[in-house]
Amino acid sequence: MSDAIVATLHRNGADVRRRTYQRNFLIGLVLATMLHLLIVGSYYLTGYLSPEDEPVMTVRIMKYSELGPPPSITSAEATPQVAVTVPIVKPTIGMPVPVPDAEVNPEQTIATQKELSEMPAPVTGQEGIGAGGVKVEQDIRIEDEEPPDFVPVEKLPIAIKQVAPTYPELARRAGIEGTVWVKIWVDKEGRPKKVVVTKSDADIFNEEATKAAMQWLFAPAIMNNGPVSVWVSIPFRFNLNR
Image 1 (cartoon, rainbow, N blue to C red):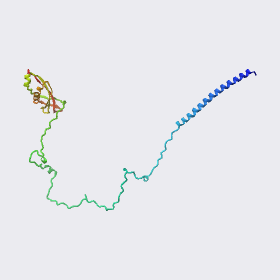
Image 2 (image 1 turned 135 degrees about the vertical axis):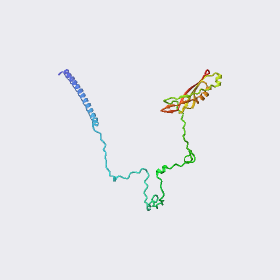
Image 3 (image 1 turned 120 degrees about the vertical axis):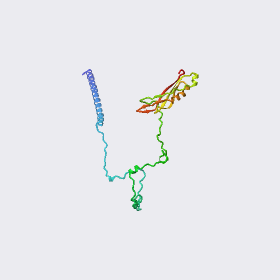
Image 4 (image 1 turned 90 degrees about the horizontal axis):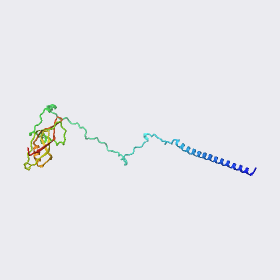
């Protein structure tokens, strides 16, 4: 064989060996990788699927006689009991003692409950004086408390007596005119108990307006079929041409 043929055969054989080596290397690498993944996956899969070991509890049933005394509530030791050798004495207090029957007058009678209730009460020397010398007041009237600014009523108070205020002479000479607004506390009997000036054009008219308001009389306000005390607002006008 010539040298050219030998060289060609040698070159072809090297190419075949090279391709075979590369193929076998890739196959081996793939198989090794798969084997490695299979081993690792099997380890974790086994740990995931295997049930965890549950703790084992042991119960021992004891008899009541095997239990000791319960612990003391306090840390101090219990006080030892001391035996008493003194003989026990029966109590004397509270024991019934027989006594002879009391002498009873056979002619004595006892009043019944009906007879006692019909007996007249003792009369004292002063009227209105109770037991122990304390004088009892009759028909004590408690004054009404001052009502709030707004009281719901079914019927408003009606003025049945109106008194006009006196015009102050000093204001007349000075030619002063004005109006005084007052609110009157009307009690349950329709009488003014208090007057308050809420607004005034001139303070010189306040006193006369208050005096006149205290002389008014009203039919009291009605609520729930009964009289109630309320506030009533009234203006007093002071005009020179009247």
